[in-house]
Image 1 (cartoon, rainbow, N blue to C red):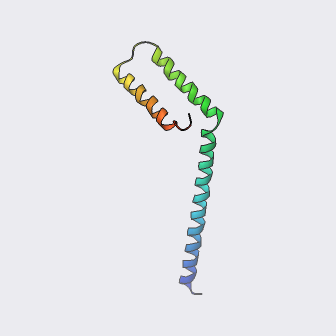
Image 2 (image 1 turned 45 degrees about the vertical axis):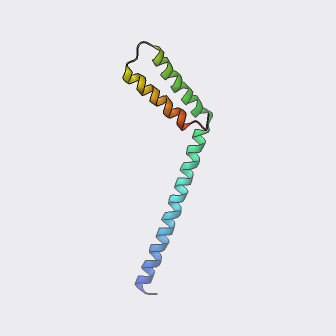
Image 3 (image 1 turned 90 degrees about the horizontal axis):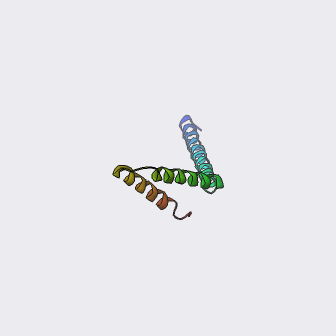
Length: 85
């Protein structure tokens, strides 16, 4: 084999190794994220955050800006996790 054939083989092997490494990384990341989303601790965290927001809403007057912000925030949370709830 000449020098160029060796370089091409090394390059292809490197690409293959990089591809599989990236694939393994993202599959592990996906598994970790899905386990977090399905955990009871995450559900508890969401519940506490929503309760905190609702308590803040119950205390005192809200400006129109804050009212729209919280309305949009709750809508986004509801839309994002609608299949979970």
